[in-house]
Each structure stands twice: as C-alpha cells, then as structure tokens.
Amino acid sequence: MKKASQSDLDERYAAWALEVKRRQENDGRTIIPEVWIQGRDGPKEEFKNIEVKPYNLRHDILAEGVITTADVILSLGDQGLITCLFEWKESIEGDEVKNYMVEQIDRPIVQGMTEEQIKKLTE
Figure 1 (cartoon, rainbow, N blue to C red):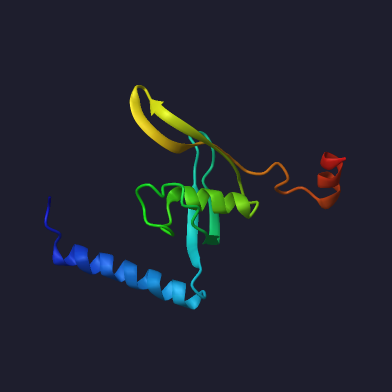
Figure 2: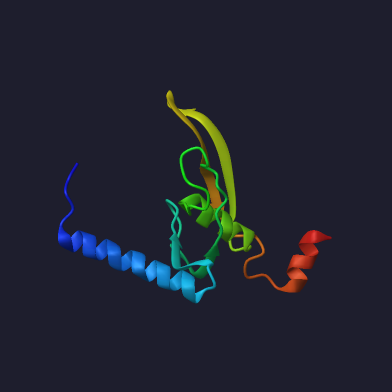
C-alpha cells in the first residue's frame, strides 16, 4: 500500500467537498454535471446535468445508495437519453464474475425525430 501525499489528499478532499456542496444545492439528489460515453467506433456523446439514482446492483459488496457507473448508465436510460442492455455473467473466459455487465449502449431510435415520425413508428 502506498502512502498518499498531502497534495493527493487535498485534491480528494476538494472533490469530495464539491460533491457534498452539489448534493446540498440539489435537495439531496445526485446530479452529475457531465457524462461522456464513447464506443469503439462512434463519436463521443456528452450529457449534461444528469440526475443519477442508485439501483443497488452490487448490494453484496457495496453499501446501499452507493452510485456506480452502472447507475449512471441506467439513469441515462430511464431518462430516455440512451438505450442499454445489461446481461448477468457467471464467468468471463473462465474467470468467475457473477455480475451484471453492460453489453450495449445506443442512442434511442427516436432521437432527433419529429413527433409525426415517432407516431408512424408506433402505429
């Protein structure tokens, strides 16, 4: 284990203090100011001021309410900004995983469509 330097500790404390302030300003809600997602071949997608809720997928190892990357992805999906596919994996290449893995993230097909175009899709 490596001992953290004072500057590392100061940086972590400043980040934590900003996080606490942001939660207080948003009535206890977790709002992430910027989220970027980039696939292997696609452009970087940027989302601003995303409210994130905990889904507690890893209640076996994390305390209830801890926000994870999976929570960010699921929250983006709940808000209709992306579609995503999670799959349960027992193992990967022989190594035990026993966890949900993100298999796919896409922009919704309706992104940028007019109400009339969306209506035609659902008829």
